[in-house]
Length: 388
Image (cartoon, rainbow, N blue to C red; front, top):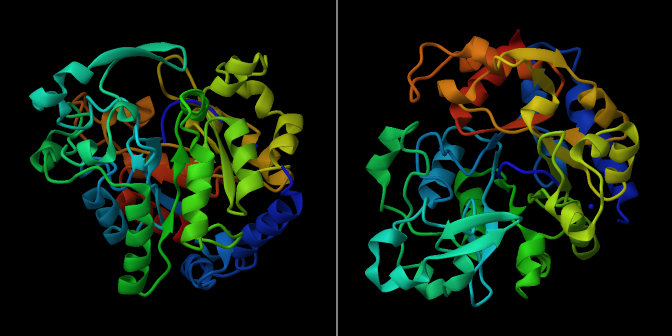
């Protein structure tokens, strides 16, 4: 998932999932925190969203607080640390039409492509969703070429320790992720969930590399395109979710960036609405017609003051729940620069602040789960919350 924003015949499906989701947490509210967490967790295999504990801990790009993101090293560690779902991955296409897992199509910051002289001439500048971007792009490489590259840490200033693992892992394909999911489910004796995202779908459709059909084809091939399949699909572009809703029966989530931004598909088609319009009761009702949840930036749940500290809780959680939508906001990280100001400790960019305090504050709003780079911190924070 990135830092942006994100639709038709699924109303019945959504209502069912919504009821099931609230059943998981609500039916056991009278129990002790431990029993409540156990009750949510033991709702059973293959039961769709209702089988997940609430609040759900989602490993953001894997365990990207500890390993280079979108690698099998990162995904594997997220499971080891207790993540309920692994965000594997942000899906972008290769020149020959394969889907691979990278945060962005530009891979200069997440691979060692700059160290490959044979690809020096692929460096170029493109306009990506209205932003001039220079680097190397997945759509200019075949899958075989991308497989010669290795992943590196994206934010070394905040995560210097992760650079130890630079060069260790290759770029995974979505098909490899689907096979890995089945292997891990067998090995661990419990259903492993994934949460892929279609990245820049309007941009890629314009290049003749439509993402949704490719995603749907693979999900169908692996029998993971059903209502109860352990694969939640997400996008910052509402029309991508609407398109997916016609192709598969998976749970679907619309991602939402800052209130004053516009989803790129809206910009491209002249739709004047902003995220602020999408999170009104009317906007949320519309989303509930084709999706089961929203993935808002945390600032849409609790606003921030000018100094970066938390300000007011919004009505978004209540408003979304009212129309049957679940909320999985993004992204909780342990390092100081990513925390609200009052939870920072010291000024070091790579030092941890009071992440537990921040988790507690956000869980208290009633969110159904959260994306985090530090799944182990999230799991401990949830135990504190449900036992508190």
